[in-house]
Length: 115
Length: 115
Image (cartoon, rainbow over all chains, first blue to last red; front, side, top):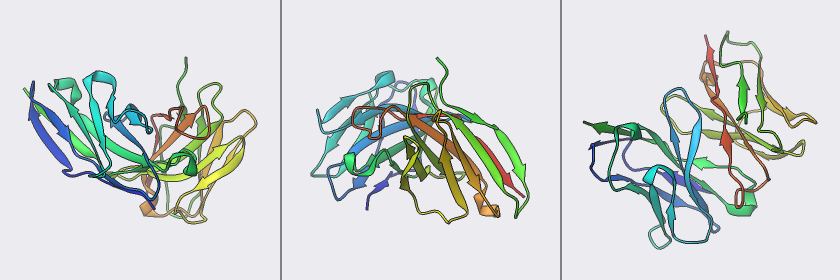
């Protein structure tokens, strides 16, 4: 079984500050890991994904995440927050080729950006 | 290019009724997955269909069923609606069955309210 834990359901940062959203996972097989963003009343948009290549993954809009197997973590970072980054962020895990494209999501972190 | 389209965008049903939600994948995509997102939570996997066959099923009761048509569009049916079925239902399409070399694109969802 696989699971995802996102620490902090709400994170507030000032515009221009570092964004750090935490994600820990559990998986019985080498995982694929994803970060999605959801704006109000919209679906999910993929920010980045890890599929066993480079451990530091760069995504869209200046976001990046680092896969750390020893810590079972895949934290999302952005050096400088922008007002447009305010949204809900979801970390997700897939058990690679064993599970089709079934994604198991964390509970989400709402990012608020203060001017 | 059109993205994943879902219909209707909103609907209200009474307890005990049945509902059908529809999803048209991106042109050329053969995989469709359904997710339920209860307010304040992350999406939960319901079904995956690939090449018109069920390839995965989440932990949902038999009241939930789905199918995929020859043109790869899909319907999700929910019978005997309960108040707890109120949620945003998301459809995701992808080119292939697995997520290693493909991406899941999400529609904007159908907001179902059961009263």
